[in-house]
Amino acid sequence: MTGDLLRLEGIGVRLGGRQILGDVSFSVRPGEFTGLIGPNGAGKTTLLKVILGLQAPSSGRVLVQDSARPRRGSLIGYVPQKLVIDPDMPLRARDVVSLGLDGNRLGFSFPSRQRRELVRETLRAVGAERYADARVGELSGGEQQRVLIAHALISRPRLLLLDEPLANLDLRSGHEIVALLGKLASEQEIAVLISAHDMNPLLSVMDRIVYLAAGRAATGSTAEVVTSEVLSGLYGHHVDVIRLHNRILVVAAEGEPVPAADDKAVVLDHGAA
Amino acid sequence: MHYLFAPGLLSSGPVRVALLVGTVVAITSGVTGVFTVIRGQSFAGHSLADVATTGGAGAFLVGVNQFWGFLAAGVAGAALMEAIGVQRRRGRDVATGVVLGGALGAAALFLYLGTQRTSVTGASFTILFGSMFVISPDTVPALIASGVVALLTVAVLARVLLLSSLSPELAAARGVRVRLAGAAYLIALAVSVSLSAVVIGAVLSTALLIGPAATALRVARGPARAMAASAAIGVAVTWLGVVLAYDSYYWPPHGHGWPVSFFVVVLVVLGYLLSYLPRPGGRPRAARRREAAHEAGHEAGHEAGHEAGREAGREAERDAACSPA
Image (cartoon, rainbow over all chains, first blue to last red; front, side):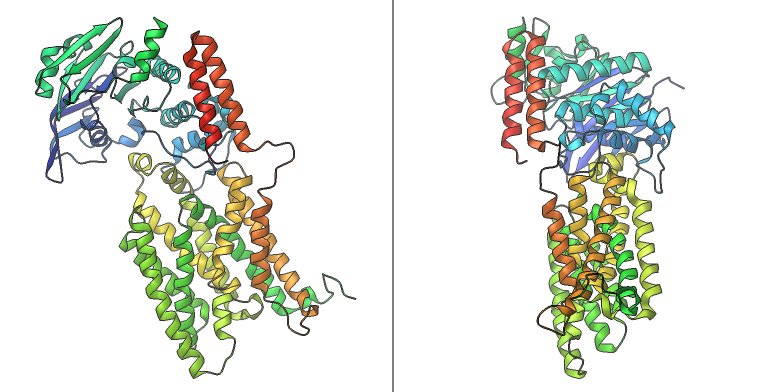
């Protein structure tokens, strides 16, 4: 027993003759908040799919609770990238959360008071009780995100994976989602692994950063990883790391890839300071 | 002088068979149709009905009961569509279109040969547009059994299908075999469509599959209620259709009843149009969204103490105003 909830050992992925991921290794402990950061196309979503068992790695292995063949369904909760949900989709927020209990199983489920209570409790935990009866297709991006987090939480996973949950959210909803996830990690000992192209909204809650670029990963604390030396090594070209107020900007010569800092967010933070 | 519920209505054998089979078919189609609409497979559903026509025409040619032809062709069509790739977003229309085209060509031939060989007039009409009043009582048990099988299949798959339509990726991550569930659903859909081909005809069975479901999805909240409402609407239009068709024997031109399928389809369309009427006490969805957006923007602006929140609110408001209601 290593005490690691999740361990990736030398994960490599080749897709259609292209090396998407090279040699990615890191581990996540219970209750730890990990940010999976990198520019678009760095392989963040692919890596999450490998962890979920949806994509077989061409090299390396994934261990969940030290098992190479884990029962992922009950151990890992997953919140996919923003969904496009038709407003006529008959699922209310409470139905989506209820599907988190047994939406993966065949057969019937009958309404019970126990189930209703559990759904309500979970919606309350993510601050979404107010729109429990609204159709998910009619909710805003931030509201949908909360409902999907509740969907993932209701089966009491040990690890929560979120794919770019902050993309498409306004700054305020983004802050609220990050605060909520930080609380879940510290209070309920749920490990959180969240992918994002901008690390700044996560700086206050991240225990560990996994920085992904050019198919390779650097991992450690933000202070260890986000330096000009480490990131230049990852990207394979020179990048500067600028710390400004409480924000970090990664800057490269024009035309070289780095995670795009959200333009709007920069303007807004400037206004607040 | 006559009554809409003519005195002889329920003592007529064909009417009783029509009501019984019509009810089973309406419930099966109603429940199955909810998932057809949610999954965006209306075209596949309609094509399966057209494919069933081929089977019905073939059965007529060799002198077998048409239902078995509908069923065999429908299920075979579903399997073929699945093999070509009906579940891939890009492959969906192509798979459906290819199977549809081939099947209709065969149907044309079978119908031609069938009407040449026998002198049964109106057979083509019955296959294409159906008639509840000519269902042979011998097939009733088979019809009911098929309906129950399709209904049970859909009920058992319901949760998995809902999760898959919310996000196939999410369902797969939870261990759902998304493709297998989709294939099983497609078979149930083929059975359901074959049933309604018997009742209102192969060409029109889409109406009973899609209409009640689409109407129910506009008015009902929650998947269980949507399924129940869809089945109820289907049963209501079927019964009303039978009553009106029975009554139409008194309508001009005298002596010939109007086709029962016509009444059912017209009622389905009317029901769907009615769902667009503003509900008493309810506000249109767009207005609700606009208000919600305005509220959110106002709150955010207040808390952050600068323009950003109000700006975000205005943006959301614009989005709500621009998106179709």
